[in-house]
Image (tube, rainbow, N blue to C red; front, side, top):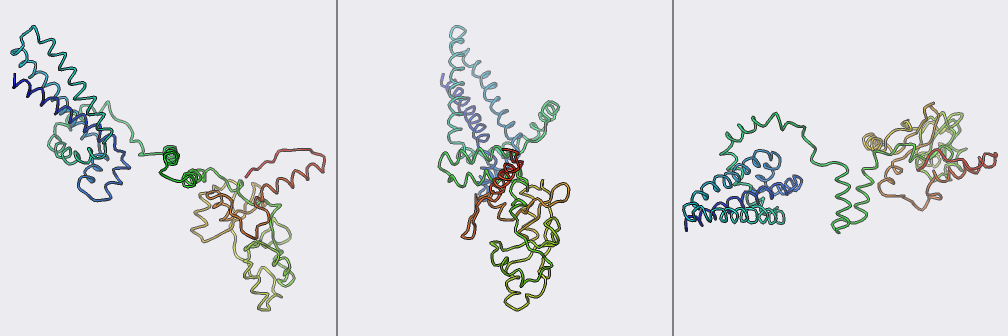
Length: 353
């Protein structure tokens, strides 16, 4: 009887350890394992190694778990038959099944899920050791099951999951509302085209590049922009862009007799469909702050600046010189008034900010 009790206890404990370890290892996300591994502790490094290639460790644990359950049941069944006889063997088998379900499956898996990180760290090194010992047997099983288990490797995470985590983090008070919103805005950036954020053509400020700087003094002083477009005969023929500081410096140094295009700098021309995230990278790489947006026919649609892109991440950026916050909205209002004055009534705008 004593030997039977010991055998039952060994089977339950062994099966419970295997079940709990399997659940704990699978409950720790690989991103969390990478974070823990930054401490360079042996347990954390072992855990990361397991999570990166989890198939063999889990196969090893499943094999051990089945050995405890199947072999243990056979051994215990033989011992129980000699102790209880055929009459009580059925009752004993039912009780043993109940104990296995509760104490070797449900309870250890529930506790392992609740304390996944600590259990996974504790068992990581032993699991790696046992996996190494059983590698030949596991490799043989992998080759047998390979035709049925081949599939492509899935990414660790995706855009939708990251945005969902940001929302959950805000709801649980882990991150602030503005941080969660910033994360969502970052992912929207690659869906925004230059046409959606540009300052439209009707709101552009520019100067004729062939006119003397001194003759443009009033316009230069009145411009709220630090960069001013220089044009030829019309806005569809842009020569470049001049810094307001350079123009003012020329006036102060009595060089106002020179034409404005002397101080011009190259300006980038981009399509209306240019994505905001790509444009941001180009601005950073080329140390630029402004680009001219052209339509499919080569005409100028407007200009987009580094500030326009940053506003998509942070919201409107307004300083003390800004008279109109949303120039696209102002352009739509002017277009609507113009159409009404020409008798076209209320027509929808083709571009929205």
